[in-house]
Length: 241
Image (tube, rainbow, N blue to C red; front, side):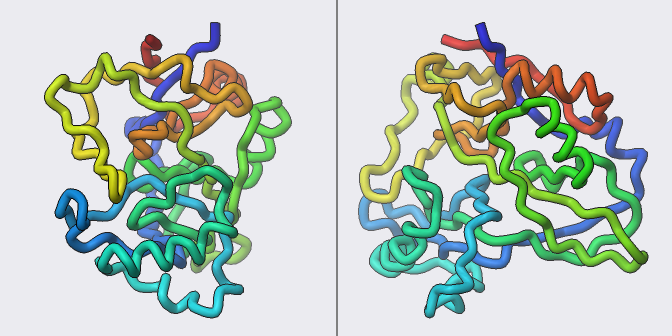
């Protein structure tokens, strides 16, 4: 049976590097102002599509500034993006598109993180994962501007949401997702459990569909990382139901 692991930054390993960056994606959907269904003003975290290029849209300027918009305007802009995005993804308020852009300094490890929901791989590391047969890794080059000559290239992985947390780890009194905007008003469970029947079978790395800040890898991904001697990722095995 396939085993699944929650990936978070191994800060003990990454602390040895003195580099840093604070990047953002070029384009984003606006946040939602006062949803007509639940009343919430909100934007999502973890819905990143760095390989989605909005430069051909006549209204690309509308996607440059993060801000809340009424439901009708959010929906209009979302539908402009939909033909360019991966099929079947939700595109919630605040979803982000295009390459990461930032100045950067110092030395970054082969795996480097921004928070616990955005991970970059150095070019050679991404190529090694492909050579190891890890499935479904789509890398998009991050536009990090270093001062040094010939800096290393880093790639953000486009990790689409798949599967979901099992109802067993969600409190009984939790409200269902809003039927209008899809917002799930839920903090991350302390002991996450994956719904086994919902998990994808065609990739080794993905985000959890109803909790996109969680990056999950299969045993195949973990074993490849261990064979490569890769530092910077802590693997926490997740139970299945």
